[in-house]
Length: 342
Image (cartoon, rainbow, N blue to C red):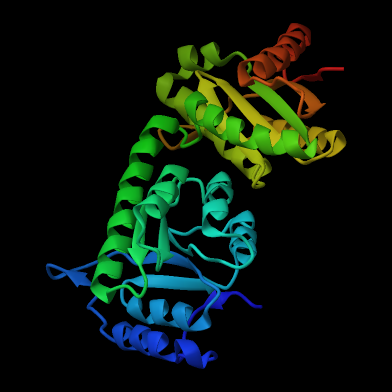
């Protein structure tokens, strides 16, 4: 079944549920302007997971104003979308899915990069307290009884989307380096813990690289901290260009030191990307008050590659220390060297 935003009329395929679907259809036609207090609202993306096409279309109609709705008929389709990097602001999940039930699906959706932080609202006809409590304990953000009131559905979806927006903004402040826009160490730690669990399950190869700008102090001493900051930002931008895959994580540890954590690439390809990035940094221009200066910078790097296993005890600080040993060896030789752990 193809995956696309839902549109079109309701199709009744089960005469025993026709009255139920008729109620859904009638509720769906009570729209709502995409404005609040005269101001245009943000359009949020919603992923609806329900095996009933009539329900998918009805929810799409209820949320036709102010939301972009994508509907899928199975949990597996939803997982596939998230694995491909699709982002959603809210997930609506039918509790009684035939392929994977809603309770089982919640942690599966949360474990993925975007599903982990996206609020999940359960759609159910079961109003039992025990059922609701179980879903909330597993990490669901809310419950909505089927068929929902269009107004309540819109208000709850928007409320959870706005709260997630605010939380993401606060997390960005906590996990982002303000100078470069890269992750800081705290942000890298968070991504590392998620990614390393996945790699351990699949015995996937990972690489940790530590890079340091050579003779950075002399840049600050000669040209001032503004040029030093520009040099740091230049290295950050080039690292993002060369390590841009979904399984590449680039962070600034502090000062002139950076870390790249990467998975699912063989050692030869990783070495090639690292060397190409190093060479690009050596030729990148530096500017002082908009005027290009003669000075160029270089980086030295240390790297280590290993294969994750279920029995491994991996900690980010230990892996960085091992890559650091290679970095120190590189700096003891001459500038712009790359050493790796044998």
